[in-house]
Image 1 (cartoon, rainbow, N blue to C red):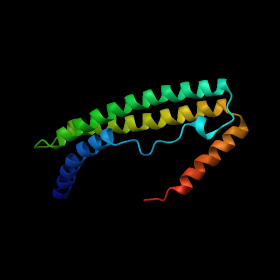
Image 2: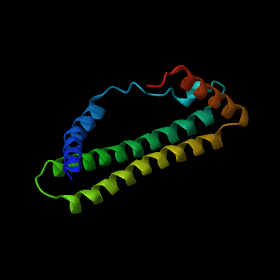
Image 3: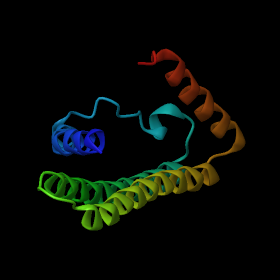
Image 4: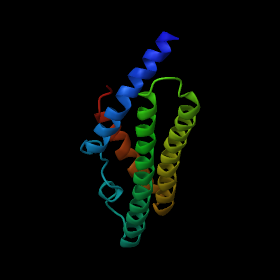
Length: 139
């Protein structure tokens, strides 16, 4: 029981710091735009891809803002004395739902963009993204 309480306390102290760091950190892991990776897009494809990317980024940003608010609430509750389980567990579930919604949105955008690309363009995009992953060492 003491280990659980110590772990929850440590998590309560860490979550607000992590959330604040993510908000203020520069976007170092910004991936190149698809329009930069696939050079032979026609204007119609570029326009559609840029629209999908912008709309998806806006939805993801809104979901991440909600996620940060939930994390802030979790941090606040975890700092309180006593058993806050009844209030915390729904927040943990909400955070998991938001994380899943971010993943779903990103995948949906990928599928929509794939539908715009030709098979050859999709192959080049996959090759370039695989090349990016191979260049980055794992931590």
